[in-house]
Length: 246
Image 1 (cartoon, rainbow, N blue to C red):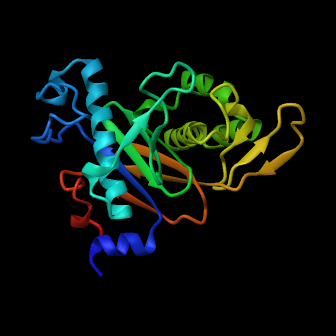
Image 2 (spheres, rainbow, N blue to C red):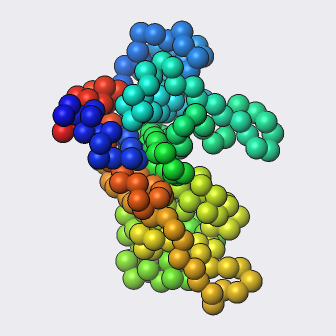
């Protein structure tokens, strides 16, 4: 089997995560994703342009992942985004025959593709400093169990980052909303939902969390536990997946 055939035979969910700041923009910048991106280094462009470049790489990687998983040439993969509230060209990405989720923050991106619903989130570990201010910021989003876990961990940055990225990933597949983050407990791989009106009632959800750390970046997904997930660290070879899937 070739590396790509191995991917298709054994894995159903694919996640690419890493740093795009040093990646050179491809030559074909006239495509629908480019939109006049400035061909300068990441550090030399404005914050708005940095976000646009991160979004560009998310779309680019998503097309390659879908192509490798389905056998469709990436250039024929159509991605759409439409906000459910305002109808604008943003919001949850969609592709025919695949479920897509992506996240980006400060030059780091995470892209997930699966035949079933999947949510992904990525954050810098350095964002979660072990201070009272960080715990106070997180507190409204936590269940009582999560709060106790963080206190026992002494404000561990990894524990805080894992908790936050799992909750953000859960929002991506509508397990909760940004206003109800404290109604879902993510301390275990299989989440528990705590109903607002009956907090003593808890229900295990048919989903699974997975979290990985890539060079000071924390990435979490929530997906169907029957869909084995392959995590791939992004590097300059990553756009050609066959080069680094063993």
